[in-house]
Length: 155
Image (cartoon, rainbow, N blue to C red):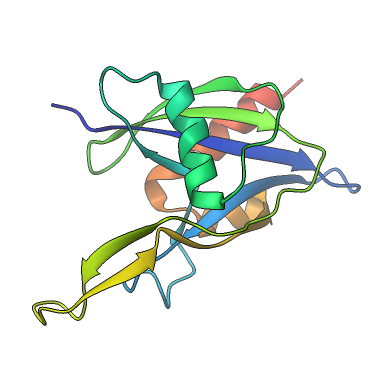
């Protein structure tokens, strides 16, 4: 059975005409000291019976701590990850600023095999990056999102 996930890719163009993307830095001890290939779009898994668009909006709010911007979202596509997970991505252009508030948390045994369980945020940072920078910040499996967005925006 394929694991499915849905997420939101927000974008804007700055005053110089540079395409920018809103990315989140994954939380928890594995990602704590990583920057390159350690960012993602806000996303999360959903059940087969759930609408992927509704899941994408829900996951945005859970990971950012604020509702997604009230703008028009378009299906960007489905992207197969190296893990075989399938991500359905919805893109939207925003003009308002987006602010990271606080992420939901998950429990993890840390340090491994210690018997101690700790809470960690799913996301520990979120911000805008120029698309050229996002190409190295995003985990490798999500980098095709940038190409798909550029193709969608091309005149």
